[in-house]
Image 1 (cartoon, chains in turn blue, green):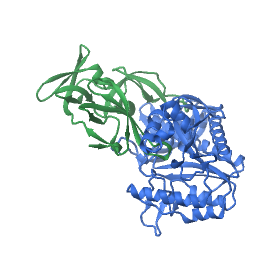
Image 2 (cartoon, chains in turn cyan, blue; image 1 turned 90 degrees about the vertical axis):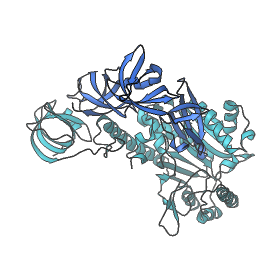
Image 3 (cartoon, one colour; image 1 turned 45 degrees about the vertical axis):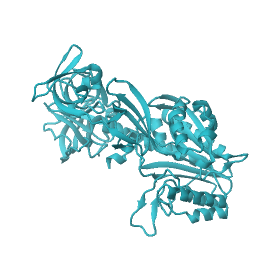
Image 4 (tube, chains in turn blue, purple; image 1 turned 180 degrees about the horizontal axis):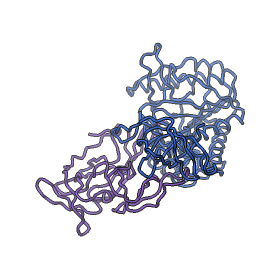
Length: 403
Length: 187
């Protein structure tokens, strides 16, 4: 029976064992055998080749394994690639491969915690289609189009349209954990294909979903560190709810000395101030909500009752990392149609592809969606924060750059 | 001309007649909005660093610096001396201009020396350099889990993280772009 190498340490000396894995080092003093659980030094009369895959039978002496018989032996080699990365990202590659493997275990455990969090709060986990007739009309999101599909299909940039149809269908608490696709987005915190956790609550307001968000992050932090603290690459971040809520108007006034009305008509200026002045300041605040975005920058959110200049849209920033984007949902079908037509016209004006309007989504709004709120949170980024990873690629099994 | 999507660590651009090297970059796209690239740029003449955010679609002027393949000879009075192996011309590069690259040069290493108006302003070592491990704790036996790396020093004073099976006196290959251990080399 094959044992995990990590089990060996718990066995008495002189136990007969069978282990298998990849030979990382082979030299006269012995060879180093590594499996998914760990690694151990082995001695044998005959040394296997480095990088070969072997299964051996022998005796655990409390320190090393004295091999008596090779039950399996298969050569392995490393073909040098241009960027000196190996084909297998988790096996060979010594220390870095091992560290990546450990992060993948931690990632899976945290995703299980996210599922548990929503299950405990009576959310139904759903899976909606990834290939859809309209990927959304956000001006700055660029969708991947499936070339051969008829009628035209795009990969979702978020499952928002489909999940809102489920709200019209009578589901009241739904969550989805799945892939979203946004072309041309790659960097320390971006991947063209990434994992989103998106959830909606019917008969609830945006504040309820902000509370879900801070509690979810606190839950994940506690699962990882035992405390409501994220041990990030930049240091500890206390994520105990409630987090401060800062309106976009307050943030622009405080960190850039600008009134929102001064910048809202010039989109580029708005985003430049956000990137250069506001976001760096938010980094200092630990975990914070930025809320009440200009109404023109929230096509699917409802306007704030009493202040139609801003929308019920929020984002959470944790350690300066933008984690999510949530709304008090727009449920007025007529207003939604006119906003989508406006977005289509803007896309045409800017020479961007004009995606169709999803009539079934609008149909759901016409049928009626209760007052609802929802949020879309980048799960890879939350995992980065929890594991103290500096780059999104560090928490992925195979990042886009290694395809 | 470079596009913002060409921005990488080490990219060299000219702004207002001054050559800059990108030392850090980050793609950002706040609030499902416009994309920007945050950068830190090192002025290659003075060494000072400043931050600049480029909007997606902005163009950057490529720095056409002369690069000469030269051999590293030795340190001298706080300078690093390089020689052109065909003309035997020698150049002195300051410690500041060397930056972290001072950790990667060893006897006779061929590097590319960057010249601006015929004066050296920096060097680029090969992507990989090989060094002997001068000191590191032993760490091979018994440890079946837990830490998988340990610190090790090379002769230039650089400390890197190496796998536990690397011993003193062994040679390793270091990626000069990241400063990280790449693999063990047999010598």
